[in-house]
Image 1 (spheres, rainbow, N blue to C red):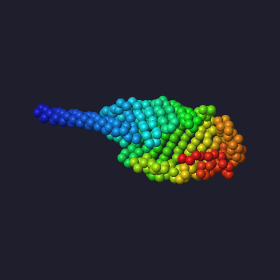
Image 2 (cartoon, rainbow, N blue to C red; image 1 turned 30 degrees about the vertical axis):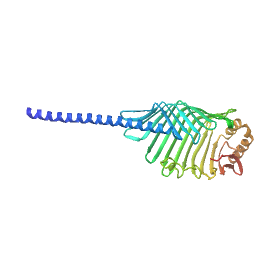
Image 3 (tube, one colour; image 1 turned 45 degrees about the vertical axis):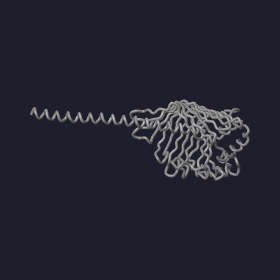
Length: 335
C-alpha cells in the first residue's frame, strides 16, 4: 500500500511539474511575441511617419511608444500633427493614448488631450480645448464598422479674418456615434448646454440632439471610402433633430431629405414645437434683424394650432428654401 501511495504521489507530482513547465513556456513565448509585435509596430509606424514627412500628406507623432503589456497593446504620442499640403489643411493635438485588447485587436479606444488647433489656408483657424475626450472604434480589414466619441467641457473658437468671422462654441458634454447598418449609415450626435458666441451676440445655451440614417452610405466608412462628391445625391432619413431650451420648450424636426447634385436640400419635414412664444422671443432677441419675420412665422404656426402654444406643422424644403405653407421662412446653404 505504501509503495502504491508513493507511486500515485510521484505521478501527480510529475503532472504538476509538466503543467508548471508548460505555463512558464507559454508565458515566455507570449511575452516574447508581445514585445516582438510591439517593436515591429513601433518601427513600422516610425518608418511610415518619417516617409510621410517627405510627401504631400504628413503625420507626426512625438515620442512614439507602444505600451500595454500584458493584455493590451496601444500607441502613445506626446503630441500629434497632421499636414495636408494639397488642401492647405494642418492640425495639431496634445497627447494621444490608445489601447486595444490583445484578444480583440479590431476594437480600440483612444484618449486625446487638448488643446488642438486646425488651420486651413489662407486664414481659417479653429482653436479648441476640452476637459476630457475619449473615442472608440471597431474596424477590420474591410474598414470601419462603428465609432464613437465623447467629450466634456468643450470650448473653442473659429476665426476667419478675411470673412470677418469669429464664432465661439462651448458645450458641457457632447457625443457622436456612427455605424454601418446594412447598406446604410447611422449617425447620432448630441450637445448638452451648447452655446455660441457670435462676437456681437451670445446665443443662450440649449441642448441639441440629432439622429439620422443615410441610405447606401455604409461604404463611406469602409475600406472603399466615400465618393469624391459626397454627400451629393444622398438620401437622408432624419429621425429626429431636437433643440431644447429647457422647461419643456422643445422644437423637433423629422422627415426625409435629399441632397441634390447641386448640393441643395429638398424634402418634407414635420416640425413639432412646444413654447412657440418663448422660441419667438429667443430668436428675436438673438437675431433682431429677423424679429419681424420671426413674429410672422410664430403667428402662422399659432394659427395652425388654433392659438395654442404647441403645434405640429409641415415644412417643405425645395432646393434649400424652407417653406411654411406658401411662405419661405429660411434658406439652407448648399453642401
